[in-house]
Amino acid sequence: MRVLRRTAESLVRPNTQMITAGNFRLRPYTDADASSMSAAVRESSPSMQQWMPWAKSDFSDYDALCWFAACTAERVAGSAHNFGIFTLDGEYVGGCGVNQISPKDNLCDLGYWVSPLHRRRGAATAATLALRDFAFTSLALTRIEIVVAANNAIGLAFARRVGATHECLARNRIHLHGRPVDAHVFSFVPEGQA
Image (tube, rainbow, N blue to C red; front, side):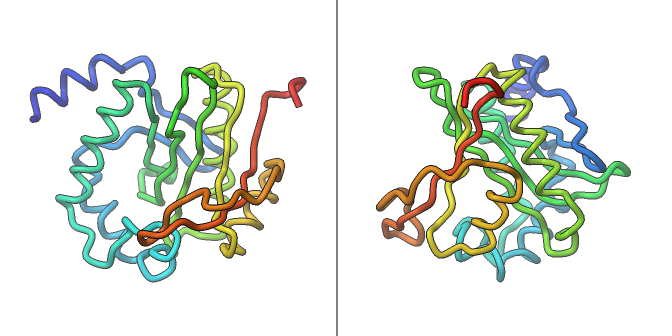
């Protein structure tokens, strides 16, 4: 797997740049990030698991490595670009990415999470706005969606705070814990196309 992974990473080197996001940096994951990520997920599990079922309390280094391999495969396929969020001195903060990229419709979803230790320091805002710009400039997409479960008050407030446009409450838009859930759809489009 390691040989295949190095080959995949070399194929996407132009899109694996580090992105400066205010006081943070976004970069693709490396195997060395596994223990930092897994510890942050376990710490975040109580507050995140309701909205992100993958954030389980026993998330392991192996789970992180599997996620990193999936991220590399999706980057090669062009279906997602996921990044770790780090402080400028390299401390792991959380994760973010653009995913479910649709070449046909030229759009994607945008997601993010920040560990409790780093919340309320601007990481999610900086990462979201940097990803928005990355999607419009580097990927030349024309629409970005942020989809938030209907009863996720913190997620709804955040989407509004970063300037995403609320479009609708979509019935059965996402699946959480094995069942369909209504969700609000927010969007970004490039300036001049609104």
